Image (cartoon, rainbow, N blue to C red; front, side):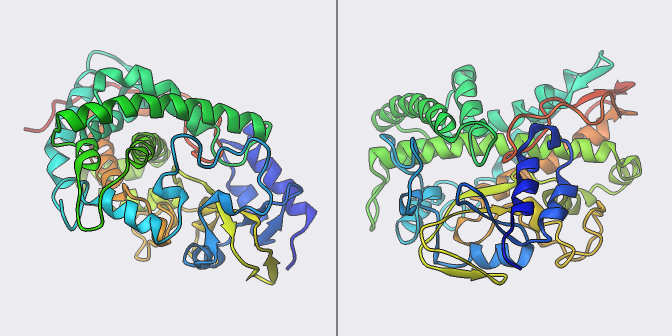
Length: 413
């Protein structure tokens, strides 16, 4: 079916803030036309099979410099360089390998799992802080502090500097992807916040070269191997990416997760009795209420036929991951939250060569935090449903999740 104006109207409704609490009926309408061309020339793809094919198609670039017509103010690149998420193979692969050797397999296979005791200790302390109260904000009290503390520890960013980079990270996140506001204005705001964050990280990287530690920033700044190392610009761009993505998306995953569990009280009881169920519960959360809804920085390198429509070379493409994960052609009863699903493939972490770099870390953080909240809060219940949401349609999550409860049980020894 060719793209049509009706589907463009549906996508406009999805971007409208009034739809943030529940965009899923609109995604169902959008999937009726799997490929949509918007008035600004952007192509929107919303069905699972087509999204997966494009994620694995080398003709779909992640480098916005390949756009046939760059919008005014487009900040692709910039003085701070482009991180590997905005590049294609082979350069993407080289930078990702250099980053991964300090983060996970094959060179540091135990790095994430070794953080488990520290994550549990941080979570325990945060939940202990809720004792003596009857109301908490899951986002401000738990979902934000844990991931930001962990990513600071992994990267080597001083935790006491959180207030400095928090505002920059928020500005970057809230201007990502398609939006209601003027594109050039959003690009300028993101470029300004990115520049400030990169200047801050440049100072940290310089200090790590002089006095390396056991953190990722030190490793990326000092490592030289058979294929060389990262340039100072590449270190800054990669660090900025990991710092922002390493906590912003996990905050949404935890907040969306607790919100969903509170809407399913029977599951709360099961998780207390069956702790291993948290693994499949988090996987289902990544399908059902993912932290990232769109991938919007893709560009076609050639004409690509998709679902009966040809997307021309040089065109910007938005992949609606959250819609694909609820595609009834891919999964049965897609709007039902079911952690017992035997088939759990989803687009919660994207796919292809750009599959989420921090997926293992995000999974572990969500499993630990959600299990501890479920175990320790006595009779938790939502204060407001739906809760207030953050502005971004791309990184969608509640700004607050207020919960009333009757007490906090002691942490298990």
